[in-house]
Length: 197
Image (cartoon, rainbow, N blue to C red; front, side, top):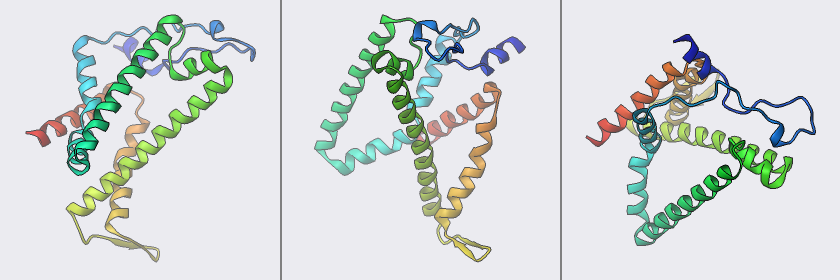
């Protein structure tokens, strides 16, 4: 069991050689980075990734946008599918490509790796921020007319709930053991199923 925990705690990214002029071919795989997930776990995590906010937001967006939004939805789906095919082709061409920054490095050199890394991290930051705002809005509508004052600063319900949600979610970022985080993930799937039921 400890061996599995060691595998989960090591980064999946390739190890880098100390030479600054090293190319992608000079990277080496970590021998412990082999995947060992089952088909059922993969399906479970795929459903978890696709469920959640999208279950409620996509129907609302389609209802608000009308027929044009339906054509946009299919266009985005086809574009996403085509991008997935291109990414698979890139990764099949070179088995050392393990991440989007690696593809950027292969296509555009170190500049491509840096630009893609910046955009990936920026996307993660903006998604996390938008989820905090979304939860703050939802809880403020659910429990209206709530607020407090701290050191002369008035916090409305929305700001208070954003801070509260951030304080509740923040400890999950510090978890080193992915097994514990899987229970948090399972609770999200359970909540989505409860909403749909």
